[in-house]
Image (cartoon, rainbow, N blue to C red; front, side, top):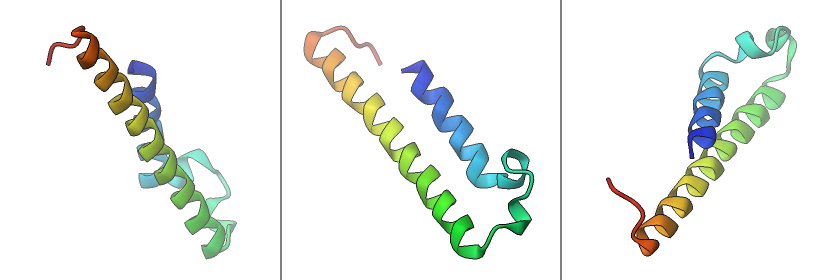
Length: 66
């Protein structure tokens, strides 16, 4: 789960500071920028879903303490 949390943090930084991760960000079209941000947000949701699924599995087994 830590790896997914790390990836979420990385992707949130990409959404908030895209020019830090893509040097020629300002040269991208608005459509391409929007597409990348949409993609990063989707990945954030996917990573969070993976975390939630693992927590559910651990709770079912009785191996999860909040």
